[in-house]
Amino acid sequence: MIHEGQTERLILRPVEIGDAPQIQELFPHWEIVKYLQSRVPWPYPEGGALEFLRDVAIPQEERDEAWHWTLRLCTAPSQIIGVISLIKNKDTNRGFWLGLPWQGQGLMTEAAAWATDYWFETIGIPVLRVAKAIDNTPSRRISEKQGMRLIGVEDRDYVSGRLPSELWEITAEEWRAWKVRNWKN
Image (cartoon, rainbow, N blue to C red; front, side, top):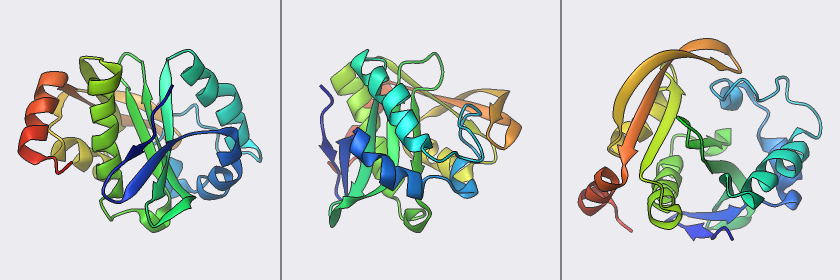
């Protein structure tokens, strides 16, 4: 069972098949997808959101391999504005995207803090790692702000091609210390 979450400005609701039409409309923009893993098809196909939810996200959740939430403003809970995911994987445990109109407002920083806390405190995994293209400055800033450490650099494949990438990490103990100093919730 995946729990719904809330931050100061966001509702994080577990994904469901009925989310596909809004995701399909919001997601397929180059500025959103270019730094996502290369397994995301581009150009994004008609029905891509439904296929992802039906064939990937929901089955992963049923197997306790991943957890996916839609992001919604508390002031507009019926409107999806993005998605955040936690994944049991060697070096990419958190991924996210946010619709263009809502970028640059600190919303993903809120969602990432909530999801990171869920990873450590609810799921109970001791280390969180995220990989990101070096050119993805907004994503890097979230990792830096939330106490993550840079542990490696390597090339990875993204929708936009093979790019130099950074691997960031934080342990449960480091997260808990960061929360005491920084988290408002």
